[in-house]
Image 1 (cartoon, rainbow, N blue to C red):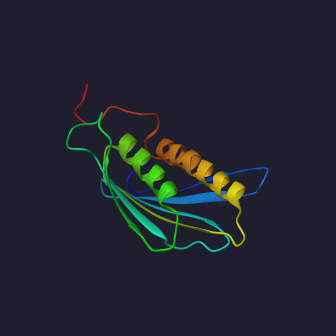
Image 2: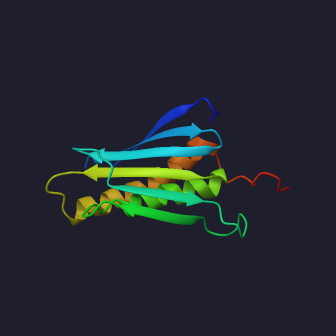
Length: 136
């Protein structure tokens, strides 16, 4: 993905039909990602992930803003952390997933799809885990 690109990445559970989409855009050397799904996409949570000053083997630093009573943080956090870890740069993720009458099984499916989306976005953004800039 080059600096001029924006991409949409989707993951879907074939059995239930649940789907998550991510709009991925570079902002200079940083990345902005909007995750949506369900009947009414919205902004329910914002996660900022920055590379750890301890180095590339450490977990990114994460800041979270959640609009109560939204519960998208696990999805947004997974996408932000994986993209930051593999991109080696600042990542902002907004997430909003809403589906009326969603049961525990549906929630579990969306959480699993969040993990799948995190890997798919990171793959689209920068391919397999690469060495950080300046590391040989």
